Length: 206
Image (cartoon, rainbow, N blue to C red; front, side, top):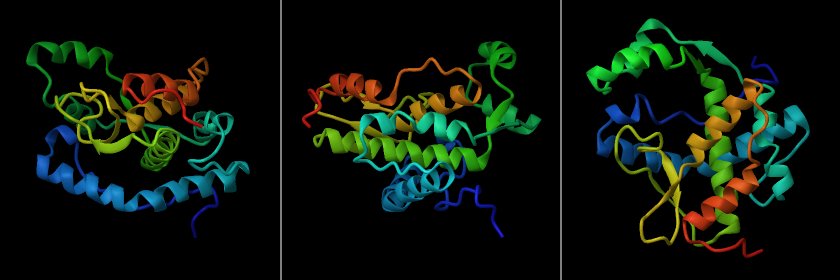
C-alpha cells in the first residue's frame, strides 16, 4: 500500500533526454502532457492539500501560489547520480568543454517522485499564468537542443520574438534551491509579472 506521502501521478511521456529525442517523439510527448494536464494539475493540488492542508489551484491568490516551492521543497529529495547517468548527461557537449563539465556539474538528481511532483506543479503554475493572462498559450520549447526548455511545454505570448516562459525549468530550479536551503528567491508571482512583460502580455488584467 502506498504511503500517504507518496506522490502518484500520470505516466511520464518523456523516456529519454529531450536533446536525444526526435522532433516527432517530442511532439507526441507534448500532446500526451496536454491531454494529461487537468489530471496532473489536480494531482499536485490534492497532494499539497493532503500533506500540508493547502489547496492550491490555478485561480488561487498570488500569496498561495508563492508557497508552492517551499511546500514541495519540504518533501522533495535528491539522489546520487550513477556513473552511467552522469556520463549520459555529458552527451552532446563539445569535447573541449567536457573536462570542465566533469568538474562543475552536480552528481545528484531529483528523485523520480520529486521530479514528477515538480513537473505537475510547473503545469499548475503555467495554468495559473494563463488564468491571469488569457492571451498566453502552451507551446513546445524551441531549439537549440541544449536549451533547458527544449522540447518541454512552455508558455508563449504575443511578442514578435516568440520569447518563452519555461515554467517547468524554472519550477525545478525554484524547488531544487529550496530543498538545498536557499530561500532568498523571487516569489512566483513576481516572476509571472516579469515574464508577462517579456511576452508582451501587459499588466495582470484582474
